[in-house]
Image (cartoon, rainbow, N blue to C red; front, side, top):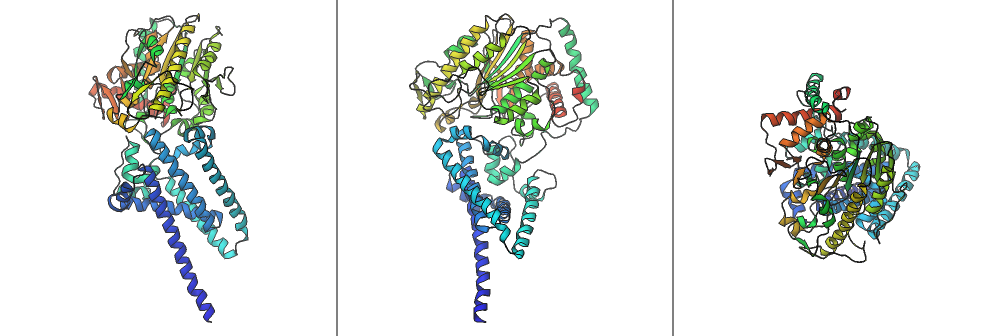
Length: 612
């Protein structure tokens, strides 16, 4: 009897210790994620959790507790479920810290789709850290799978408890995943104290915690429905701008020049930043071209990354600024759900162009293989199918020179006009150990080695671009080129960032080139633009026939030459918010309605000639 009593007493103690252990694990993991989000500042973590935002800290911990119990019930083991939970949170926090360090923005739920991009991840964080993380993950998954297999041996009573816990936690996680639904109770609990900042995800995570920011970026509609959206409204807009181009198009020739888009990875002028100078200009060859044609600065949505979003804007002429802030990557979150999306590709395909996409890397990055198919490209040439694959010294990526040779081969086919969209890789991070020596020596406020290496990278890229444009002079068919850098590299120190305003950290180089030197704006070398304006600007300056959509954008560009979330250039000055007069507001609203119609609405405009 005494022995039984001791056993009964031990069980409550055991269960109490288990509960305390699980709660302690959740508490530590929530603090850890916040620590990684706050760039390893323990002071900020303590203030966030126990002074400034305690309620939001507790809400985030509840979500993590549900996730922990889900893993434990799935595996049938508290110990192994906890181990896999710790590994998952550990990797997630490390990834968030890395992204904050390199790009000054946090991890989004959609970023988790990149987990299979082993090659890029290894290059970004280094071989040894990557292999260590991979090893830990593989070992954890092995024992987790083994635990699931062995769980069939649990007693009937434990199986009932386990299955019940699994169903309950699974349903709760599904409910949590609908965080942005109007009546979601968790979202309402956050809304009591949360100050959401849509234009700055970094501040969003800072104010609501890692978990709050992460949940905020779960699935959501691309755009909210405008109050005046209807078939009649869209017809009125499409007719207005289609009528405007009839007279203009009647006086222009239906010329079919080759059109080349070149999005150059991380291409920018390091000496555009205060605190960075060099003994000679790495962009000399670039400026030799730029000073003879239409050129200037492009406003990039991101710093240090976001390549696919810039590409999305350039191809579709739709703006990321108009999307809900949770629509962080249209290539993976939006386009896969669509059967078609109007773009410069679909426009030119309707004019008997051959459309080719070239990316000297693998086809799975940002789901490009599927995206390019939806957009309408005839073929996608990747690193596996390229003819030219030369690399520069120890650079792991195919060179720009090789990529341009691939383009020139396509232009040899003079029977059909070509549209070629090239996304280069030579100047992708990391910026160290690529070259045996650098021809450039910088004076900079920190990180000199990486900046010197980067200068060598863009120096080679500039040289390749000049060779390419020189070769285009021998192409018989008129050939137009739009060249731009997608974003700045994430190599600049905090001291350099402090010396420069935010806009400057988002400015890259762009130019438009005509091998017959006929662009109407060829004497403008200080233009400011956004990538969604590229196609209509090129069509307008080259004398090609416009569409109603491009006419709308051309008129909007004259009023607001460049804008992204938090950056608006109007009346020759930058501002954080967009202030418009009535006529400007009408243009902006017309653009917003058309974009909504395509990405979230009924696609009424696709049944008109607006995009043709």
